[in-house]
Amino acid sequence: MNTTCKNNQQCQGKKTQNPQTIKNKNLELIEKLKSELEAEKNLKLRALADLENMRRRIDEQKISWETFAIGNFLKIFLPQLLELQIGSQHSQDNDLKKVIQNFFNNLDKLGLKKIEPKKGEIINPEIHEVLLSEEGPSGTIVRLLEPGWVFGEKILKTAKISGAK
Image 1 (cartoon, rainbow, N blue to C red):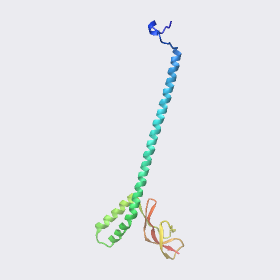
Image 2: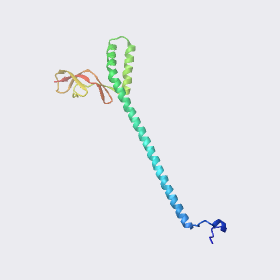
Image 3: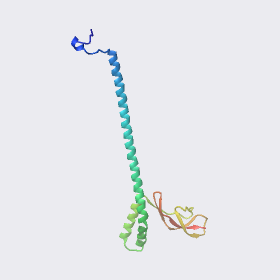
Image 4: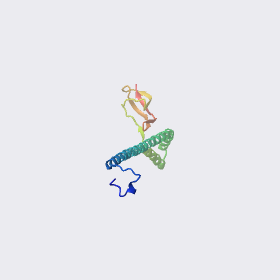
């Protein structure tokens, strides 16, 4: 008679298992559950990493799109602003001059930079446009005729220069 059963009716129709067998099955079940838990943790970590990578890519794309949009806007808008600046130099209206200067200060904060090469610098055809030829060391800038403009890596307007023969 099985000692684990309290009475015969309880034990009838049931197979009794060895306690070691039960322990082994429980250990197997625990190992299986640990393995499944680890797999779920890994899936969660991968999903979080993917989410973080997606956020980073979206932020990078946003900056890229903003830079692209501002660059295109400046390519269209800058010539008119420069004309307005030239016109204001012949005006007595100091308020207009301040407004134009504020425009350029704000554009500078966005990344618009003036290209102002100095006398003696080597001519770079990517950012300099030679309009006149004068005496001086060959391949160098003699004088600046009109500054150029760059936004980020995009040349909006080349600097107009006088170059040496």
